[in-house]
Length: 469
Image 1: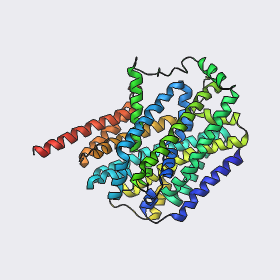
Image 2: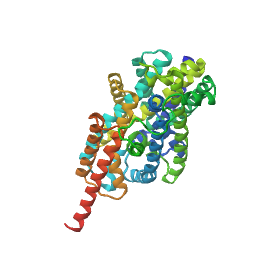
Image 3: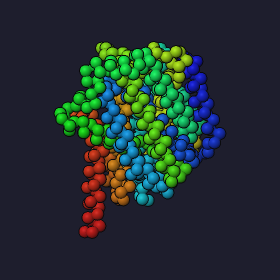
Image 4: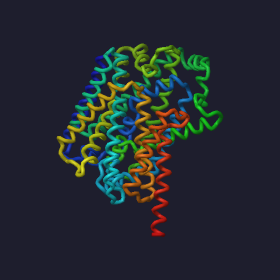
């Protein structure tokens, strides 16, 4: 098992390090690969970055717990992601090139030739805090996988993830991240399909699988039942809430940077074909494996559902295939972790200082620092991977997406309006998560909706002031 895993890991590391041969000494090259990435590579990189350790560890555990109703999370998430892409991605790519922005924060701060400096500083601080939390979840997922399959202590496994991420991210920046994502996306898909086939075979074939699943009360009931609101309102609110989560992809700096790196805006439909085709296929396979994990392990007290996939792979697969599975999980965590720490580095060196830095050594030092910081959060936090990811994702979406939507629609937002919108979105998300409000609605949806309403108020007030000075 260890041999095949380390061979795959060495391949990914070699590809990442080789990207340094094309690196240029500029911030634009380090953070958006000089806007030279072809559409197929942007699509595969974006889907590998999005489908992180959350999919291998968090989603599997969630599906183990709730059954087939987890599919509604997928429906809402992908629908929201697609709607957001059609609304904003072309405009974002064109505007970023026009104002020379290397990330979403500098893009929103300079949109329409504005200079919203005070908002940019706040956004950079929020970004570093929550991107680090998100990266910590990925590092934790990698540590869990190594502990479950190779019996390597979780802390050491997390250190291994951090070390590999630092190595090739510092070497090639965003280009290294995107090149390795292509290989990682293939590893992720192959490993998930292999485990799916092995689990079905072990459980006696498809007919036996459906019989066993039907014997578990409510496991194949597609309607969400663990909600606080009865009737159809609960499921509807659940799906709409996760549509907001999908749309929040527009506010994830590590995903947005892929679309900003595209060669030409006219290629965006090709990107979507690669991105959503691969995304939907992989999500279906991951959900199926989550369902099978419940049949395989049963319902036992003290069992960590987020360890279901690595434990099942170790039990069912021959050692060399188990190593491939572990490489797939590891690839998923690294493909997101490297992007997150690069986005943190962008916030620290491009957005927080008054004048963005072009010093290549400072850019690399920021990458190393943020990776170590994220490792520290992962070692300290006791929350699940799923919980950490959806919280950080929703908070970043609430901070950035409402502002982006109003700017795409033509609104002129000043720094005060942007500060109030982002602060309200973040606070509403945090309050909904930690103060016992109903779990029917995803907390990120509450934050995004609150900020969108405020954006409408500021926009209407601005229009009225033009006509009635």
